[in-house]
Image (spheres, rainbow, N blue to C red):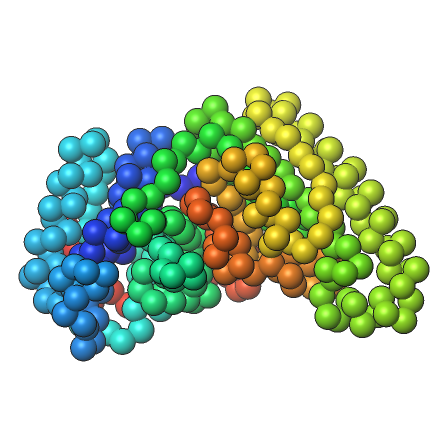
Length: 314
């Protein structure tokens, strides 16, 4: 599943709220940890109420302290400080994930005034956009505390023919490690929740559109039953359900119903009728779900990004 996870830290207690989940994942999977700080060009003096790391030596001392805490928990930890000041921190995080051969990035998110914001402004969303490495978004409350992570109930949206195999595989392996339960959710739009492009056709032939959606629901149920049977045969505790409606809203509501403590979802979907990402970008789910959200992006092109590391690693 995951063997190396990158944990960007800015020096704030809020960013450190991911460390409990990092420790849990490290213990479960044996995953090694790389702590990262990128020196920011013209950084602020304070961030989230704490002193911002501005100098390389200061960052190295800070990361070394965090590394010692994690090593005391039995984790394998190294660290990297990118010493050349940069303005585009999200892109740098994504590029470091590729260059340092990491297969998971763990980032904190938090809510301010009822609106979900990312720890580095919009960095977390941009990390997902720039890179191909899976990203685990960890929600922190106003006090900088994250929800307890089992995970005991893992929710995964699935769609027949969509490139979501990696998401299902990651969720199944996690459930196998924890003895948790996997919940597979197939979402089929209603006539009122299809995308604008799909609705344009439906307005002219509403009966045909309804018929197509009904057929899609039936096909989804058949495919989902097969996937549930396959995973159950492998010893995974798994349930499946088909729901109708707008994808993001249905996904969040289902997460509440099953009390999911992790959602795993692909960040790309097929175009056309039923394309998951046509209606439910990750930011919509992240804005409403208060637990960890694991985003696994289907690569558009093979290969890694170019070399970017300039700094100190230990």
